[in-house]
Length: 116
Image (tube, rainbow, N blue to C red; front, side, top):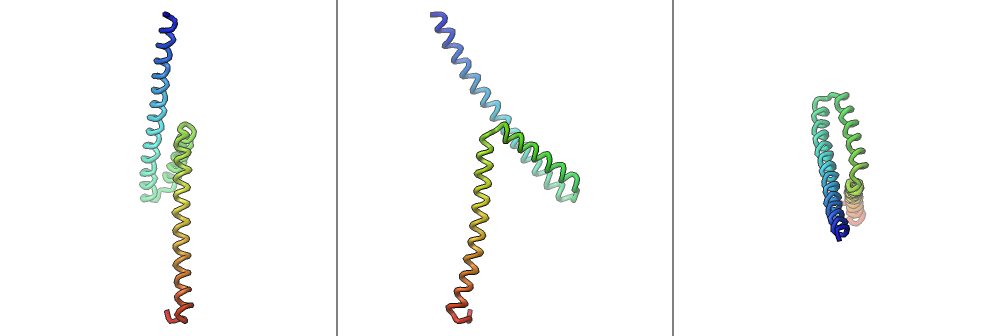
């Protein structure tokens, strides 16, 4: 009976520790994300001051932070792929809008006999 209580207590404690480890990991991921956001602001400052070396070193640091975040936080890998897909979709939509505009202009010229 004592052994059963001990095993049950150990199971509850290990579940609590697993939740704590996930929370620590998530906090680490959030911290790295805030650091990356901060250094994007620093990058804007470097660009504004036309300091090429500062800009280059800041880009390298951002790259290192993003690589480390992707290794330690697999959730962000899926999120970064999703963001890239959305950006590509927006780019495709803009290209399609330009194509439709050119097609509409050509159709107007064709159907009005060049009057428009």
